[in-house]
Amino acid sequence: MINQLKNNWKLFLIASLTLGLAPFNPPHIWGKIQWILGGNAFSAENGMKPQDWFDVFLHGTPWVLLLISIFLNVFGLLTKKDSQ
Image (cartoon, rainbow, N blue to C red; front, top):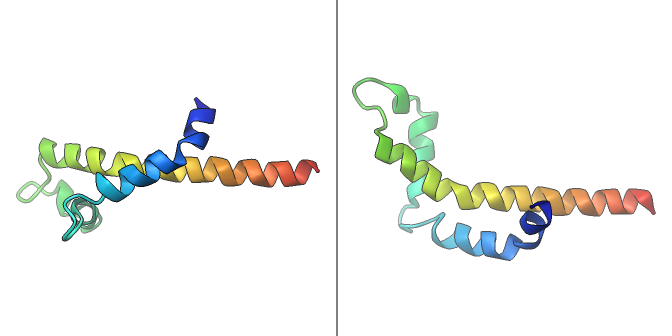
């Protein structure tokens, strides 16, 4: 599983640039992140609905996988250099 996360960084990059940024003007995930960080996502009147949380999950997953893959690759390189 860890090797798949490390080796598929190109797939995660493509998914992040397509699904993660769709629709492109402005990126959907950016609006959702602003909504969450602004505090309105949890308000009773203007709170996020289940479909909004699904959007965050759908558009955010490629970015999370890409970050995990980058971290594993960088950590692997650093531990490889330390052992030499």
